[in-house]
Length: 455
Ligand SMILES: Cc1cc2nc3c(=O)[nH]c(=O)nc-3n(C[C@H](O)[C@H](O)[C@H](O)COP(=O)(O)OP(=O)(O)OC[C@H]3O[C@@H](n4cnc5c(N)ncnc54)[C@H](O)[C@@H]3O)c2cc1C
Image 1 (cartoon, rainbow, N blue to C red):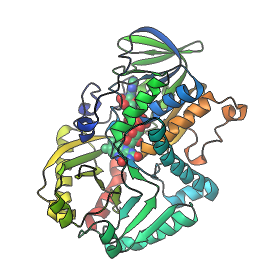
Image 2: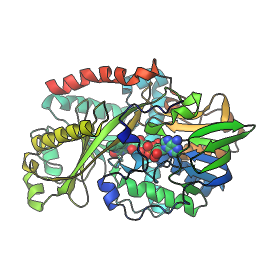
Image 3: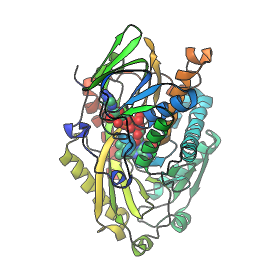
């Protein structure tokens, strides 16, 4: 079977370096064990060297002494984990809060959001305990009302987040946010949600990789798994250069999900593009011209929102949606549009040079919540995916939860995944007519694009 790769080939060249600002500033790559070669064996094999796979490997090796290997098609952190906006934030779902309460109940919905808070703290703890210098920045995530009539919605949202979810959420009016945030024709007040902070995403994933190695895991970059079979009780993973036998398996491919490796994986994810542009460092005068004092990760209140931060070296990083074709030209057009919008949102920065631009894949599921579990027909295979553009904390937490589950000696834990919030438990459903899922997504996105255009 051929891999499911809905976008242009240019998004799937695992050997290509990424032209990101993070790649330019991450320092030395993780010293892996080299590509897999010959015949090897281990207890647990992990497919995918991003936050999910490396957090699983680190926790398995460090906390349970498990013999674990990670096979990564590119370099460590090649996927979304090395290219994202670095928002360590509360999110992970696209399903509306009202729909979550209807589907999972109030208590389980609150549990899911409290797990997100725990996941943010987990990232901080990993940074501290494993000495990962990921350049933490800011206290809280800001959602800015792009129009005056968006502010009342933020006021409602903050109340629900406090009362129903137990979160630290509050709203500031336009003037208050101007004093501590910034001024813009598209700033009409803001919501501040804690805890959230910004980090250097590639430094974080590389730090996870180094820590996993230090605790005994072996990492094999440049090792795309081309086939997966089962021989008695053993999984056999084949790459171009070698074969790995493993008793248990963790699938951690997210937006690059290798669906072709197993029938259970087919049709369950919807990868979508997200783009990022980064400017040269802004001068003190340019920052003052927009009254910029905000070091928090920030998004706006549009349906297809922009996300942005001024980085520690004073560059503006602006992220936004992607096109549906995936060609390099299509991405360049979307990025050009983002740069034009940058000049409208912050007029004083309209002519500031953009030095880096890149893109990657976020991963949605049919139920619009993450999916964590084991194959229904093979309890030696674990998976975690579908973080809806919010994986810095959620994927890291997922990797740890998989490790706990996989290594757990508690028989109740082995039999059921009740230790996970109901929202994330088990496989997401398959998309209907999976070969056409991107066409459905395009249609589903249209009303949101129109609403933003009308706004
Ligand atoms: C542009 C962009 C901005 C984002 N911004 C944010 C943000 O600010 N905050 C946030 O929380 N989240 C953000 N996200 C989402 C976040 O990056 C992801 O949710 C997270 O990185 C997922 O981690 P992962 O380990 O599951 O997947 P990935 O990091 O994508 O790793 C999967 C890996 O699997 C590998 N792989 C696939 N098939 C095979 C195979 N057959 N053999 C071997 N290896 C294979 C791939 O090479 C890839 O490296 C963003 C994503 C993008 C693309």
